[in-house]
Length: 253
Image (cartoon, rainbow, N blue to C red):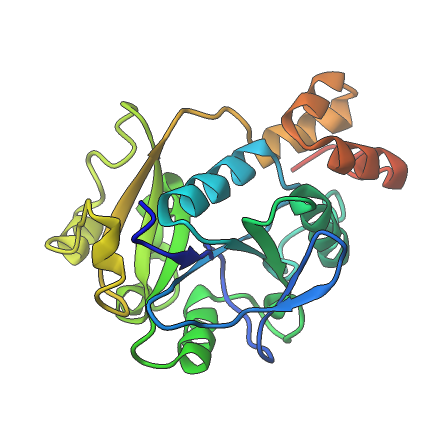
């Protein structure tokens, strides 16, 4: 679908910051720049740790829209204990995970501003940076999409960006949505990626992909339990970093 272009972004709970920056494979800063007719896709999360499931979603979006995808780690959640990695470690693991893949890049804007991470704030910032007419999309998993009614100012999200929902094939991920969510997105669904280029925001697109079993929570628990199988679910460089830093050795929440 080369007609559709995107620069990716995802789901998180926002922060505020200076113009976004991405990191290339060599750690070089690459600015997030808007181009006419190019869809910017934002993929956020805690990525604690980043795993192959996260990368599969990002690459599926990059392939579907024929552009790089930006993964953006959220700031440290205030409720998180000391069992996970801190923000700098999570961002570094993302750098390691995307190294050598020009479809993927990392943006640290949410780590550079104070306060909790709210997605609506981040989308406001991106919209201001990109301008009112530039196509912008928020990439998220089906579980995050179903939980949207619990997010801060969630009804404003489709006003600021398109929503790209990574759903698993034949798994019913998008069936039986909460009534308030189903009503809010009624009439917004689009199967055509090109439609996301025709407007700056407002469409919902299902990005279908094979079922992946990776879970950050399960990974943290496996590491704490001494189960070596977790290494097959993250990039080798990320596994080596986790081992070198002794991350996630305490019982996971």
